Length: 120
Image (tube, rainbow, N blue to C red; front, side, top):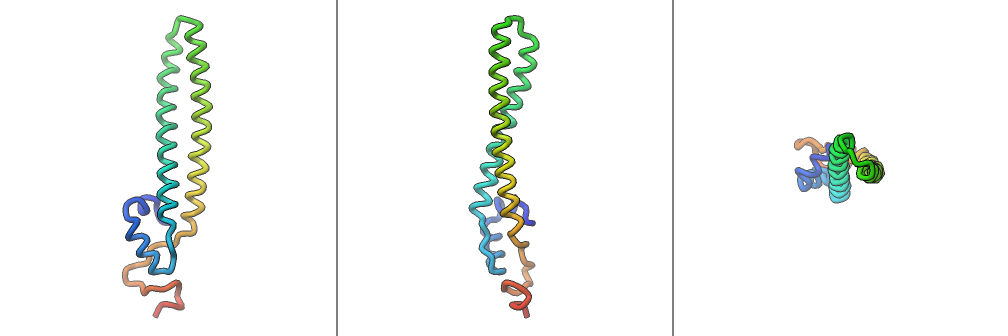
């Protein structure tokens, strides 16, 4: 399986190499899915860091009303995290589904063609 990094770093070369095998690579789709997955993952990490900071602050709070309000806000952030985690998992699963059907790059000395019948 081709690593997603290969799609990001060398989309043109990957497309060209796979066309030699008669395969049209879904480069734009893979890059879009990976970008979406990475953006959601960054959001999740930011929210988790905020939740960790708030948890420490809640422990030190003396005012019960402020503490209750902050706990409620953290509950909502927890729900956001769960939702974003679901989006990350769905994007990852869709990405893996696409990548499993993308063939490996042919070696430079491999003749062009779809399979062994096209090779000399």
